[in-house]
View 1 (cartoon, rainbow, N blue to C red):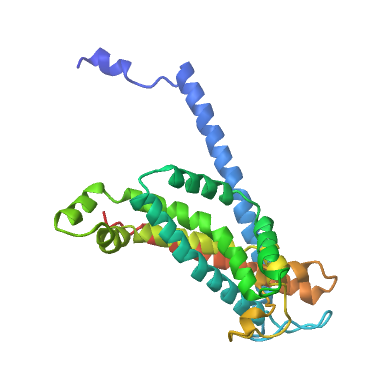
View 2: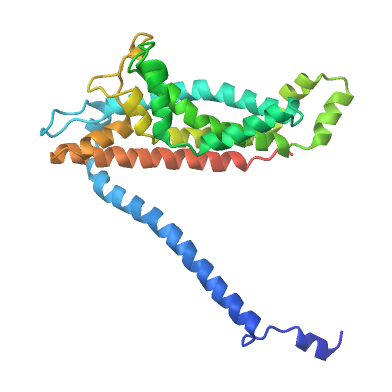
Length: 294
């Protein structure tokens, strides 16, 4: 390569291509900033408004009557864990098994294509529709009424698309040679899936579950239609699962529209806790994806 050839490979900052590239780079950087600013603005505002209300009473006491100070949101914290836990128990087995069928046993037949299409549609359905569905199925029919079970079903409907799609993609990433190797040593198809493919895809499955939990934990509209609200301690017995229950998102909604400052402060504190819950689940999802088996 001659000196003249090397010189011709140097970037000319005044060329049209270089100018256009610089402009597009600047636009991309500006778009990135515009994307990040709202996130940090929300975090900053919620922390400023809610951090001052964080204390022991917040996590150990019931909400106070309107206009009175002190009190906490302990019942809503427990209720959120109960409802989201029920939704996870319902959604994870159904979602994972559906994804296993789609990836491993369907052969991309018409049923599988229909299920994938329905999953994509369901992922875009507004959350209030899931609440109306659970209300019509369980509440208005008096099967369970307003309860944590009805709330769990509504949130499970919202979690299913995320779990199915991420698990399906995680199973597709596992190399086909791994399945052939298991079948080559005499394993049945279901044995290869259970003992080889699923463990290999576990990080992706965990990611889908945590992302589904993150979405469900912050939903309000479905719980207004199903779990309603309660100012008392949740009853974690079987009978208690059939009663209305307090959740963080509904508490934030109810207290934010009240004209009393103590309740508004509790709403900000509940918002801060919800943000931290979503951030924690997102961090867990990112950590899970770091572990690569294949």
